[in-house]
Length: 143
Image 1 (cartoon, rainbow, N blue to C red):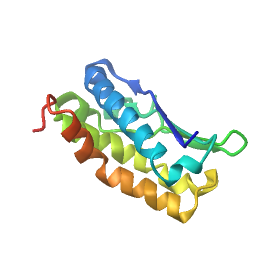
Image 2 (cartoon, rainbow, N blue to C red; image 1 turned 60 degrees about the vertical axis):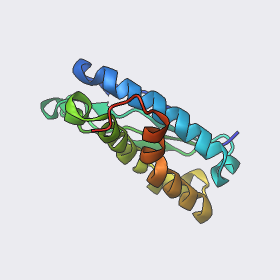
Image 3 (spheres, rainbow, N blue to C red; image 1 turned 30 degrees about the horizontal axis):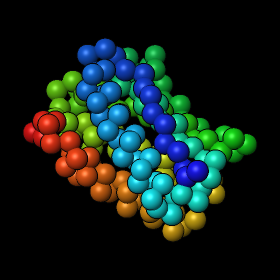
Image 4 (cartoon, helix red, strand yellow; image 1 turned 45 degrees about the vertical axis):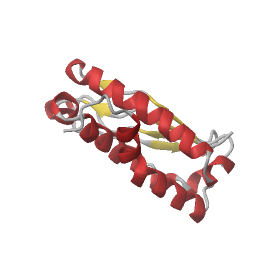
């Protein structure tokens, strides 16, 4: 089994629907791309992505809390994402913001056992993800 990407979130209600659309599209895309890449060899490793999508005035109550658990091979990535993008932005902007948060996992891939080739594969997948997801979902608003 390849590197697994799993996502959820802590989301303030007005951003929920847009965030969930982005999450579903991104999660499916990333898992398929990871499985078809050098990341397939990272058996038993997982990125659990639980971003915080809250207005800035709520960030103190919902702090970022990313951490690596070497024993289980899981990196919990929990950054703040731009709440306003999920309230007023286009689908493309929302996917781009989602991927910006996922990219923060990169610095921990080596700790999960990833080689430089696998980290490069991760970078390549993320660099193309927004355009590919938007192209695969033509019914979503692009601007």
